Image (tube, rainbow, N blue to C red; front, side):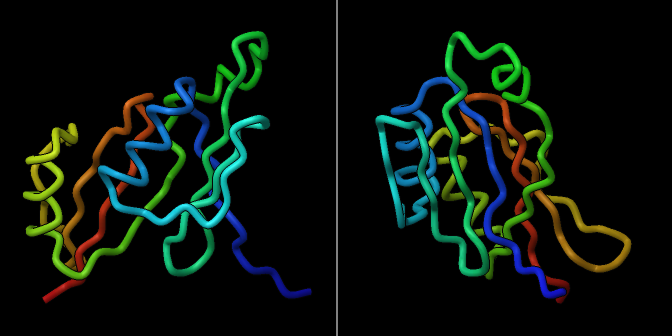
Length: 123
């Protein structure tokens, strides 16, 4: 069997705020958006990053908001991306940090507390 990554789902509570953060602040293009059902797909190159609204009455879905979902996004210039996003008010857990394997990682939070990892390539 062949598998390909379709999407990584990120659960959010404030739909409009989340869509603005991902499209305007992070600059991801929305390839699909349906406000009625609370689903958006964002272009990330390979696969899609999907936003899924956690309805107020859906305790199970709301329990998923703010958990570390293991989303890693490669960027060509991590330092420049970091500086640009800090200027836009993005909250990072710490400054970019070189890893023992040579790459550089920086973790940021979206407005719902979901953690995304930015990955800079080894030099």
